[in-house]
Length: 87
Image 1 (cartoon, rainbow, N blue to C red):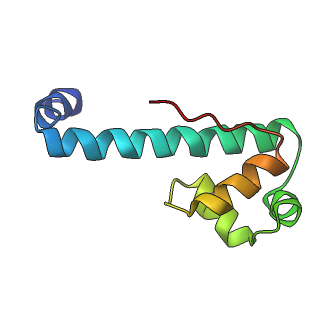
Image 2: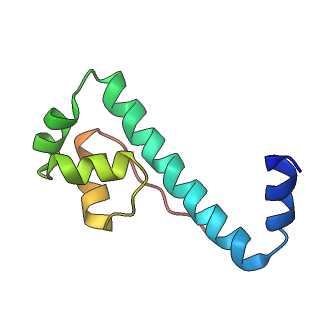
């Protein structure tokens, strides 16, 4: 069985699908932060200092590790990114 076939089978389980979608959204946010930082030519250290968070906290965000919302807002604001919430 291929990975894609296995994933499609697992996605039939509502609990798995919910967890998968949450992780997918978290990774999308992480990639957006990394892309924005690199586009601005900033190092993690520089962005962490500008955001007033530790470099370790920033690294966790960029690696898709769950973070608290305030940390995410600080980093997004330092990059000039807006945050949109929709239902």
